[in-house]
Image 1: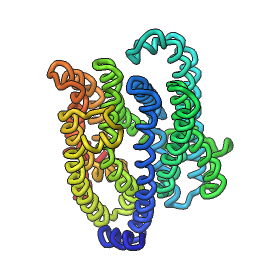
Image 2: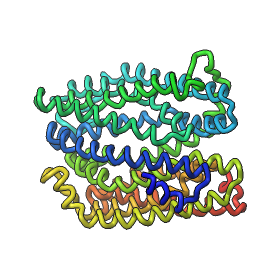
Image 3: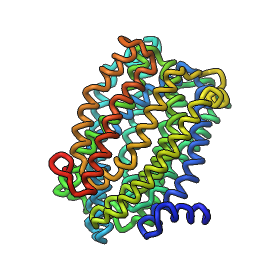
Image 4: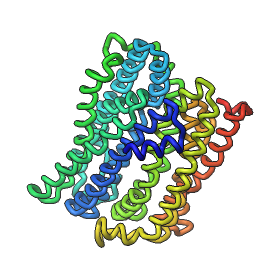
Length: 453
C-alpha cells in the first residue's frame, strides 16, 4: 500500500489536500474491489434463484422506485457543499444546523410519499406497468408496497453518505455498499436453501439489506466521529432551508436528467421487448460500468477538494489535478475497449448460457462508457465550484428528448434493445463538450453569463 501511495503522490503531487484524497482513493479501491466481487456474485445467485423472467421484474421494479431517490429535491448535494464550507471554517454549530435541517426536510418529504403511496397503490395496475400476467397483479401490489417503504427509509438514512463526503471520508462511505451486498448475498443464499424461487422473498431481502447498514452507520458515526454535527430536533432551523435548496434544486433537476437517461431504459425495454431484455441489458450495463465505477472512486474523492481549492482560488492545483484525472480516464478507456472484445467470454463465465450480449449493444455501451470517463473530471470540478447553471439547462433538454429518442432508435430505426443505449450516447456527448469548455473558461478567468453561474 505504501508503494501505491508513493506512486499516487508522484502522479498528483504531495500537498495535504491531495494526500487526503489519495488515502481515501486507496482504501476505496480495496473496498470497491470486494464490492465488485460480491455484486457480481449476487447477480447469478439471484438470477438462478428466480429465473430470467422474475429477475427482470425485480430489476424493472427497482428502477421505477429509484425515481424517488431524487425527490429529496437535491437537498443532499446542497448539504454537501454547505457542510463542507462549515467544516472548512470550523463553524460546527452551523454544520449541525445544516445536517439537522436536511434530515428534517428529507424525512418530511419521504414520509409524505409513503402516506401518498399507501393511498394510491390499490388503484395501480402493476401487472400492466410491468407488462406481466394479470394473474400475479395482486401479489405484485403487496410486494411493491413493502419494497417502497424500504426504499423510502433508505433515502432518508442515506444522508449519512453526504455527511461522509463533506468530511472527505468517501472510503468510509464506499464501505456501506459492499456490506449491504454481503448481507443481501447471505439472505438470498439462505433462501435458495430454504424456500423455492420467490420474487417476494428476494425483493424483501434485496430491499432491507442496505437499509439495515444505513441505520447502523447513522447510529455509530453520529455518536462517535461526527458527534459535533449530530442531527437534533433543537437544531432544525427551516430558515436555513433556502441555503440548502438554492443549489440543491439545481442539482435535483440535474439528477432527474440522469435518472431519465438511465432508469427509463428498463421501463422502455420491458414495454417494447419484455422483462427478459431488461435482464440482458442490466447484465451488460453492469459489466461495462466497472470502468465508470473505478473512475467514480477517483473523481468523487475530488469533489470536496475542488470546492476547497476553488474557494481559495488555487487554480494551479485544479489544472494539474484535472490533467492527471484525464490521463487516468484515457487508461481506463483502453481497458474498456479491451473488455468489449472479450465480453462474450466473461459473461459466459459470469452467468453461463442464460444471457448473451448482442454486438450492437456492446458497441453502444462502449461508446457511452468512453464519454462518461472523459467528462467525469470536468463534471466533478464544475460540481465542486457550484457553477452548474449550464449543466442545469442541458439536464432539462435531456429530460425532454431522452425517452422519445430511445423509442425512435428502438422501433423506427430498428436498433432493437441497443437503441436505448444509443439514445444515452446522444444525450451525454454534448455534456462532455460543454463541461470541458466551461472548465477552461472558469480556470482562465473568461467565464461569463451562463458559463459562470
